Length: 288
Image 1 (cartoon, rainbow, N blue to C red):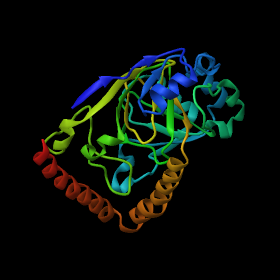
Image 2: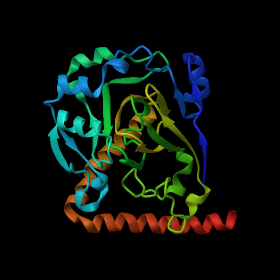
Image 3: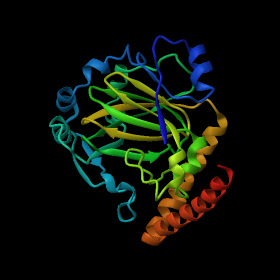
Image 4: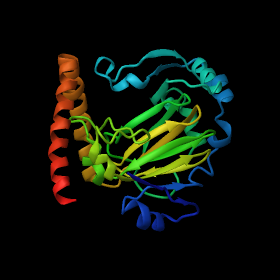
């Protein structure tokens, strides 16, 4: 498996970004994407606690994709109490996922803007992600197939990305956009094709924004407790349609059959992923 560093840029024009990164679907870290945001200096743990600490939030842990906990929250608590746990910066397997704080606090939209770096920003879909030190977002790509601009606040986060062209080597699970391969602790006996993976990696710091192109697989680890803001964009009607199909498939088929069949549904998905992988492994051995 080979991982190369994600390129870093600043002061890039819309035309250059479109030519060099958006159209060819290449990830990049934009160091000044959020340079004009009031949020960058204003959104501290202390300020968020004082202003919005009484909001109730639902938290997930590493079992989020386990068959008996599939897409279920582990617990709920006041946002302020959760932020206090994060401030301790101790190992904590609790994440706040797809947090649309702007619904509860619409005034916060004034603290950010949408840079003129590309067209198609989906301005009603702005999400915060919080996580405890050491917590992990396992490899997946986003159901809606949007481009994602993920901006890190205050602390550090590790990001590993793989192109859609690498999908077969990741052993994707049917009816999901997830896989069980761990790129930081690779098991090449269980996932032999993964040894041939080529991807990108970086550590994000305060104010860094990583551009993750549509349908790119991403893995994230909170080096320190912290949070990020994701802005989404879509420049293609076809990817919007594909994203809509993915969401319907997930809601009606995957979650529906998970509720009806439980563990048997998850075992079937994993068996199908393994069957497909074994066929691909044989084909790969013949051509390499």
